[in-house]
Length: 208
Image 1: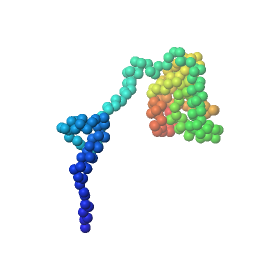
Image 2 (image 1 turned 60 degrees about the vertical axis):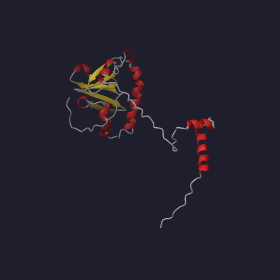
Image 3 (image 1 turned 180 degrees about the horizontal axis):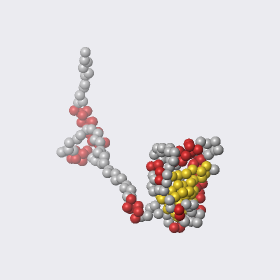
Image 4 (image 1 turned 120 degrees about the vertical axis):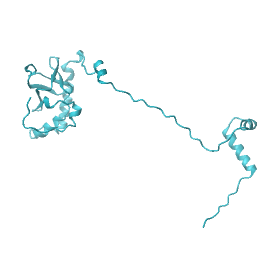
C-alpha cells in the first residue's frame, strides 16, 4: 500500500524571499536594482555546474637511439678516466656483491651452485684474465672490467691501458676468495641484462 506524503508548496512571498537571498549571495557587491537589471534577460540555473577539466597531452621523453649514442660517444671512456686506480673501489664493491650473491664463499660451498650463480651475475668491477684465446696476443691480459657489451669485454689494465677483448673464441678466468671460475666467451655473447634472465644448460665440454 503506497502512502502519499503531503508536500506544501512555498507561497509567492517565500519564493521571492528565497530568490532574492540566493541572488544576493551569488552576486555580492551589487545593489538590488543592479541585480534586477542584470537578471532581466538572464536564465538562472539553480544547480551546481562542474567545471570541465582540460586534458593535458603529456609528451613522453624520447630516449637516444643507437646512432645518436654513437655520435655522442656515450659509451666511450674518456682518456683521463682510463686509470686502474679509479676502478679499484668498484672492484671491492663487486667482490662484496659476489659474496652476498653466493651466500659467502667457503671451502665447503658447492662449486656447481656458485658457477650457476656467476653465470647470471654482473661482472662490472671483476678482475678478468684471458686464460685462452685463438688470438695469442690476448692471452695473459688482466684488468678490471669497466664495460661489458654483447660481443666484447672492455678492461683497464694496471698499466692504465683500455683493452677491448672479443668474447668469441676466448676463455676468461675470474678469481675471488680462492675460487677460480672460467667464462667461455663464445657462450657469453649476451648483454648482462639479457644474461640475468637466460637459462644456461650445463654441458660437459665447451670448445673455443
